[in-house]
Image (tube, rainbow, N blue to C red; front, side, top):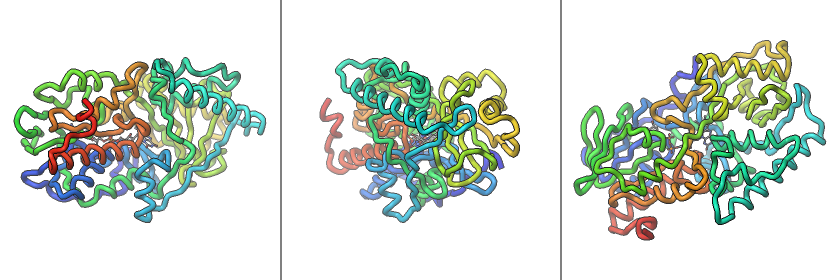
Length: 435
Ligand SMILES: Cc1cc2nc3c(=O)[nH]c(=O)nc-3n(C[C@H](O)[C@H](O)[C@H](O)COP(=O)(O)OP(=O)(O)OC[C@H]3O[C@@H](n4cnc5c(N)ncnc54)[C@H](O)[C@@H]3O)c2cc1C
């Protein structure tokens, strides 16, 4: 089975109520958490989802009998990630991600001295980025980095990869201050876990929303199968989908909201999924750094869940560069850098299962939303509801956990709590009260 396989878990879903209090648009992590919160508060909800599955950019499919995530895989920042606490409470099998990785230089395990020097370069970068992020004036994250010697390129590459764009295009003030030190994985895949959390929710799949009208007292939402009205809507959609104009909103959004949406840039991060039983990576779930290859791959996760599967990660410059080539180009790239590192003989038994292309998927159009220098206020601005009828939710609104499933989950919950407050007590949201 290929990357288009059906997800490993399909949750049972409930039918939509005829006259919901709230319509939630998008059944990714933000939409799922919003729907759960609204239902728990006693409101009726209809969730409309464009794809034929729930979970958005978190989905787990079976590959050669193993559950493999095609999108999100890590539960980042354990202490603040709501899905880590929820998983533990529900008895999910969480495993802590190992803190240390593996380092190879031209195919050989690096010396302890080289490993220590790389570690020091990352520590120095961390201090400089954190300090720079506290300055009053925003600037490109790249400009905060001190000279980092031999490992400077590596540090820039990995930070650019996890940021979604090269550091010169990323806001320093927005640079994640989250603690990447405590990360978790979940047995059976993160996408399957997110799908389990949607069990029993009133979701209609295969129903893209094409227009939202908030000119009346509530909202009217247009889909190919008809129009749905509600008292309020939560737009739990990727920013890049909002930017594309795929959902017409009338009357038009206030200029500040429009400007905030426009400010984001598409963050790109793609997996090339490898099945390679003979890979030289030793331990399960370790980040592997390869140096001395031309070019060095920006990221690699070895022996996922102790299996023969590995992700070779593509950053924005690599992925968009490969766009000009044929669909097999990401696989050829992976083979080339691995052969360059370990020699062609070592590649015996390597199968490239495929490469993800979230950037071309009409329902995501990017891996997450990136704030460029100077646009740091955009996340907070989107928390201001429009006309006390439209709320935004999703990873892009998360200040600390942006670009993550945990951040999306927290933002879905926040938006839903505000809607509950508004509909049940008429209270204004904190963000709109502060306006
Ligand atoms: C390759 C990759 C790796 C990643 N790795 C990690 C990771 O390890 N850890 C992590 O925490 N995060 C990771 N992320 C990011 C994470 O997947 C996202 O931050 C998260 O899924 C965002 O959730 P969301 O609910 O905001 O948006 P989404 O998950 O995109 O959900 C939005 C939903 O809206 C639906 N939709 C879109 N348009 C319409 C429409 N017109 N009408 C109705 N529905 C619509 C979509 O189909 C989707 O279901 C990764 C992402 C990618 C692509």
